[in-house]
Image (cartoon, one colour):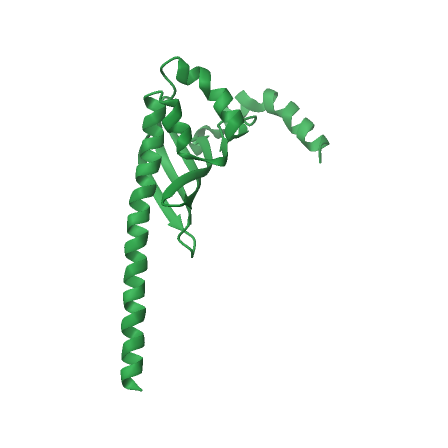
Length: 169
């Protein structure tokens, strides 16, 4: 009985070590995917940028109207990429988390952008051996002490939007 218990403990510990090693590798691959995605935008490489997104990906931008499926986002982004300059985001900090299967990950990141610090967050899925961006949400950060000023700027635009959206409920 003691031998069986010892064997089970060894197998469990080696399984945990293997899972941790797999997550470390996956985390490195996710970081590479996200960094490559941001770099493709900075280099206006349209093909590489969109190849890193899942076919059914969703991009949610900083404007309340920006909630695009991949095809709509491609249409929006194409003129920017065609000019030879899209956007330039570099990660300042990133956190990555996994579900129990290790095939779905979610993240949040602080980015250095032309809008100063922004927050990106999203979901990636493992398709075959590659991580693909399934959802990405970009948000501008607003210091709490400046919230009232920002609210004043956006009130007139967003009050009408709120009414329209509430009428659809």
